[in-house]
Amino acid sequence: MNQIGQSSSESIVTESVAANSRQASSSADGSLYRYVGREFTEVEMEIVRTLCLDPAYPTRASISRALCRSLGWTKPDGGLKDMSARVALAKMAADGLITLPAPTGPQPVPRRHLEATIEEGPVLACSLGELGSVSLVNPTFGESSRISV
Image (cartoon, rainbow, N blue to C red; front, side, top):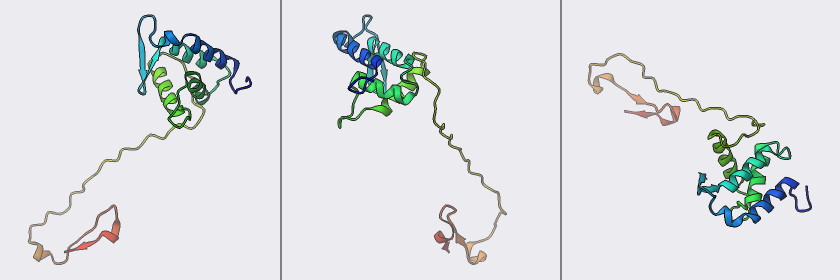
């Protein structure tokens, strides 16, 4: 790490961005990549690829923070747009543009989809008055939601 908290490769990447600032507005062939509402030029994509290959950034989180610092990708309060960068990196990897290190944290548990089942009860062929006392209970709120008719 250098004196301002950047690794040597991140510093090189930052200098590359500054040197190519005019070129960064559009790449040579004009191609742009759009992820999470941000357009990435070919020069910026090369920065992403360089950071992904750098052993100084072994995790997705470290790559996303370095990317934010390299591109000046910040929130209005000055903080890094770290989560946006992580989403963008994951989508770039899914599109085959980059290769990310394997996730190191626990993977989210997929949500279970429950389906309602209706049990067929006896068929009632009488009037409500003939039934006598009837109570309705919302299964979500239990007995506290009981309504007697």
